[in-house]
Image (cartoon, rainbow, N blue to C red; front, top):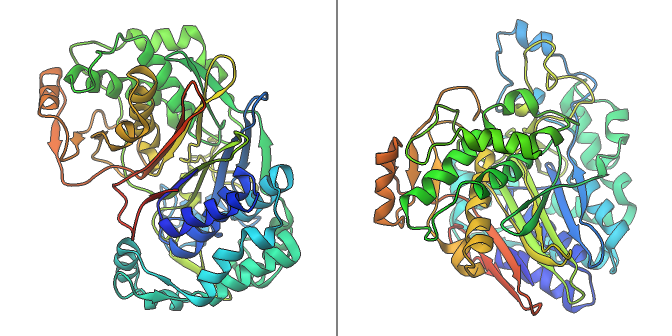
Length: 505
């Protein structure tokens, strides 16, 4: 089974499974097609995080996020008047893309099929064309005409045929020569030329993929796993551990259900700017004492004056499981929409702006510095039973709101026993008011925004002190594969996605 945002990508992943590939092969194939068809959300110019479950072993975690280049100069940015990192159209916000290194590392450890077979569909769509999704067409219209993005101009409307020959060449170079073909080929040469000293040849020679120890908590009778910092995944674990202590109502329609989960999210993230940075040790935040201390600050009848998560951010999440039970939770992103808005001209690959997570405060552990990874929003998730068997694979797009969306999904699945379809399709809340990348700036509680389908009972959040806004937006593209006690798999791809067709194959 494969769940993704695009039926072309999901179909490619399941075809790889039928050809004898592993779940990792399927995940790479799915991600590669998305890198072609969804450049407004992801691509080879972005980063990747993944978790892999194999029966009888603890989950393996991969951090394939890139680092700031040798020319990173925080003082120059401060002297130019910047108090925060540039958001768009500035090489300072670009870090070395880790996606391709992530594919190669995953394939080397878990792959069964050759990379030529895995990337075949993606190369075909890039070379021969694919129909533009509604969201791609809308994004291209707002993008303008940056150098290197000429191929995307064909996405004039939904269904328009788009060809990306430069991306096809880059994918073929990976098949022929691995990471060298990408990072030292057409893409790497154009990247260094455009960077004008911001990056060096040595920067591109560094492998960005690193196998790391996953982190976990026990919540609702399951072990929930994610990647450690520089990922913000610890926020999900901490909010789940807090939520379990709060005697959540049995019915998710109860306003106190939403209230307590919102407060758990706020109390988990109130000190994120200080504690999230490259290689940060967040183990102390997940101890019984710290979880209990934060839970004790939550009132069942009122809100805390803590900072609030935002929602924006463009990312793609996918999950896959094969016949042997290998499960993959993979999340890959440009950061914000088309990322930095800068495109490598030889291949037309857009470059992410993940460097926006750095700080410009002198001496801050996440200060913009050469060779350093920025704080990251990406949160891949697995849940296992106490015996180590796989229970769920899930994740979502959504910038800083990823932990709160997954918190709602997993609470519905693990606490209330909902099906995959019910947990993904159920209405969501989010805490709005700020950008999805500057969430924890001490503004105090923002408005609590409710999806159009939210139960009328959630209007009762006002009685707890929440400033409720009913909005027309829907929050996140989340996907979920659940495995029941008899090993039956059920998958749900988020119907919120504005694409040609959402698909769980």
